[in-house]
Length: 351
Image (cartoon, rainbow, N blue to C red; front, side, top):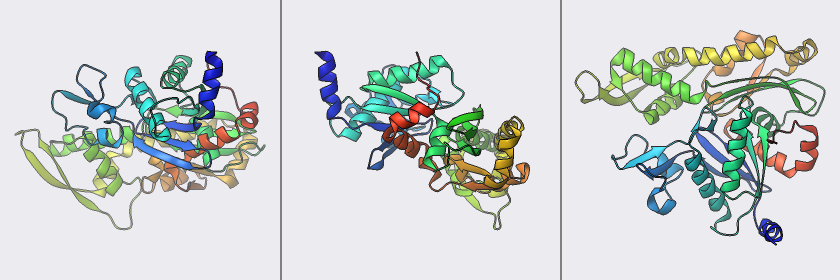
């Protein structure tokens, strides 16, 4: 009886692909594309899992509270380095997004495809499945983020020709060489957008004795951040707290300084790409000489990063069209061709 009801509810539910990211969660629905793109943040009452504003303080509304909440409120990011760090809050966030997509709070039992980092453990994979099922999923399928990104940007992953994808998200950078619908070589490092923000915060504290928050660091990165010298260098005003006197202060910071701040995380990403290339079979390496490297994820938008990677590897590098949504779009395609692609892609579901 329960199985019949479950199937009936499934008929009236919208199946979805989810890019469950450290910084943002995106949802892709068949024939509708990306219909949700919200920060992976939840605001709760301190010491509880009670979400504020009648359960509505999730996503963009909750992100606005980061670093600005009174003592009774906590803004939580349940994802850390691409994996679930807070299970209850992650489940709450997923349930909210699923209901928002369906525009109702009852009778929701969709099939869900979720993109996960290639380097996570079996326990972490199972945690994703359990959280999604408790949030209302009828069936959960997993796909590695670099594969989803490669599908999303239109790379010929099912052919014998080798192709390389670099997906730089909020918590992880995923580097993969793909051929015949499988990952031949992958490197997953927990150096990505969040570490860039932290590097900017550390630079400001060390060089200006100024404490800034995560959102300010992210704005600096987006507005004037770069990995390669710019034709016209930029500057911006930054406000924070002077650590020596404890009072608010503002300074002017330049793009050259931000580039220096980002040197270490950028270097880590470049090294991960080199490590993957060094262990790629010779025949596939030969393919990459012509096909080059495709970059996806929000980190791919850092000015000049593709130039740095190209100079360091000697390969052509291009940024995918709309890199922020590449993984989510890939989960959507995977969902549409589930039977066909699952037969050829490595099964990631926990036993």
